[in-house]
Image (cartoon, rainbow, N blue to C red; front, side):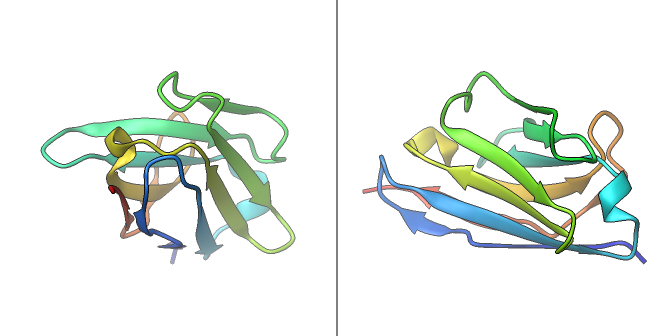
Length: 116
């Protein structure tokens, strides 16, 4: 059974930083691409960032480009999202997702709130 469990969310002031983590199990993590997707209050899902299976090919949405960095540790079956220079509009539930172009499994999400 595929399991994805996010952690690291919380309340942070504008301009601050957070690192989200996702522990993956139940599938071949090292051969799978992964993504982060978010949902802001009252809005739809927004793809944030994706990475290929080897962690070398990464891409991010324009809204987070230059501020967020996705990374993948295949030895630990862990996915990360380093978020810097956070803005109030980054407030959302962040989901760890198996896959990149065709999502196959989702974690329960972790709340990130950016507010002073």
